[in-house]
Amino acid sequence: MTFELQIVTPDGLAFDGQAEKLDLRTVEGVIGILPRHIDYVAPVGMGEAVVTTPEGKRRAACIGGMIAVHAGKVRLVATTFEWAEEIDVERAKEAETRARDLLAKPDLSERDLKIAEARLHRALVRQAVGSGK
Image (cartoon, rainbow, N blue to C red; front, side, top):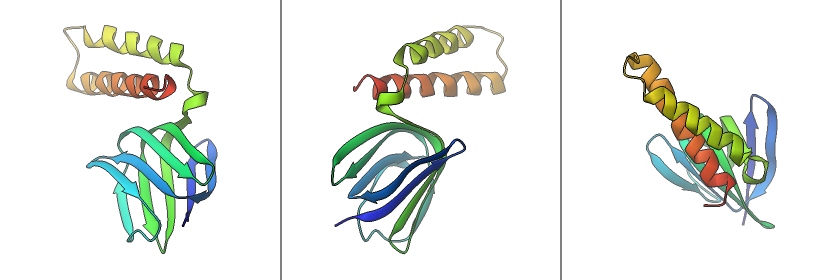
């Protein structure tokens, strides 16, 4: 049994097809969407998404956005969605270093601190997904 899944980002369509399961992190925690899921809407957090199709599983870094389930159809509108095989792990490591350097500065404003923490979290998620951890 499958459901219709569409994943879109500001860059375009990342996935449009049938899925058996979708696991991802919302701001409230990790959820799993299966066929015949109740109608549901939630803001997406920052973490790994796993799309299970009849062909197998695909992992991705999913950062921000909204997930909606309506009438058996699932639509994920993500701020950032990168399939594991497309992630440049070295670039993510460089982003981690830059974020840690910024966090080491003693005079950061509250706003800059939150931005640096978000950048660090994003870099760590991308590294984990991209390296298969």
